[in-house]
Every structure is written in C-alpha cells, then in structure tokens.
Image 1 (cartoon, rainbow, N blue to C red):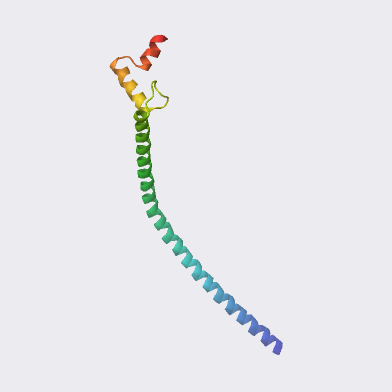
Image 2: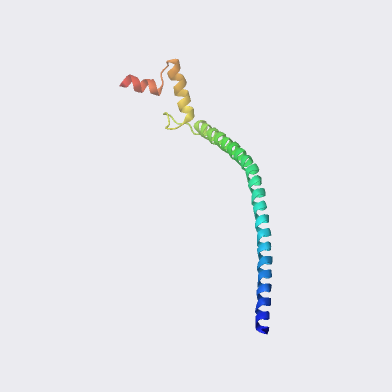
Length: 111
C-alpha cells in the first residue's frame, strides 16, 4: 500500500511538472510570435528605405560612369568613331539628323 502512495505521489508531481513546463513553453511561444510580428513590421518599414537608397545609388553610379566615359572621349580622343562611345554616337546621330556627312551616312553611301 505504501508503494502505491509513493507511485501516486510521483505521478502527481510528474503531472504538475509537465503542466508547469507546458505553461512555460506556451508563454515562450507567445513571446516569440510577438517578436516575429514586431520584426516583420520593422523589416517592412526598412525595406522601402533600402530600396530608395539602392535606386538613388544606382542613378548616381550611372551618372558617374556616363561622365567618365564622356570625359575619356575628350581626354584621349580617337580619330574614328569608337564602338560604344556615347559621345561619338550622339555626334553622329546629330549629323545624321541634320543631313550632313557622318560615319553613318558615308557607310550608307558606300552600300
């Protein structure tokens, strides 16, 4: 009979410990869910700022690259139209629209 009382007492203690552990785990789960919600809203708020900064950096880098290419066109001039030189392309495009002689009109005349 004494053994039965010990077993019942141990089962009661184990049930109480299991219930306490379940309560603690449930509270931790609720805190973690709230942390996830908070982080999600923070990330959404910062994502738009990151996109804006990245797009402005891209525009700035494009301007710097374009300026460097145009500077090199005049710093190290080439006698013929250079492939992929935006300055040469604009000069020849303006000449083509004006109807004057350019590399493009000479090539078309030769054909």
